[in-house]
Image (cartoon, rainbow, N blue to C red; front, side, top):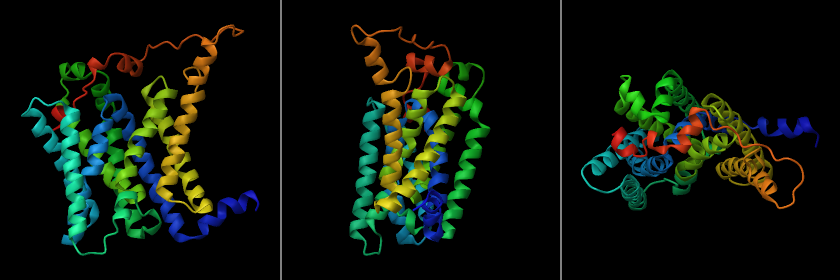
Length: 317
């Protein structure tokens, strides 16, 4: 098989073309949002929201409304519930998040198991991107475009919130509103990602691209660009790998993203693990590269987490 045939053959199937469009759209939105989640330390919140939408999906099927409506309502509701419990107890945010999202996830499993229906639990949990319709593609594109537009429109305010919440408050920004907005967009992004990789694997799309880009960048704008480029490449590669290897499409996309992260972690210069080992090796020849200057806001954020809100429950609900 020649190179052209290798790339063209899968595109002859309409279901695979739709899967490619949905996956890339969801991956781009998730990659952009993941940059803020990584900097603000809200990765666990992404995990919580993605699991908490299961009862919403199940109830939406029973009522006969689109899955996205039920998922979004329960995603936002989970964030609000976490905030209420956090503000009325002495429990830390990670504890409250764990209690709420596991309870909602178990509720969803109970509803699915107790309701006679044609719901395929595996498709809800792990996605069914090869079965999306033209209407599903349009829905994902519209929701993704809205989420991306809001993120880019409020980019400066959200970036300042991530780097220095105190300064953002001092200059007059409504930090509570910005936190709530970011969490609402998180819920919307989860809805977008459900069509592509399902409830469980969408967590990886919300964390891995931002984590990978953080290791490669020294500025936030570059971090956004790198995250989008890498996640698009991984998504396309995953789609083709699932076609030729006959494996789960969602799993293939997430594994490709994880593989990119592993490569960057090992050989990403000059902070890659292998480069560090080489510099520390006794008797190694040559001059080692100097450590990068941690002078830009992204690195100061990583070094001084006190400037970043690590409690999305109290700041965003």
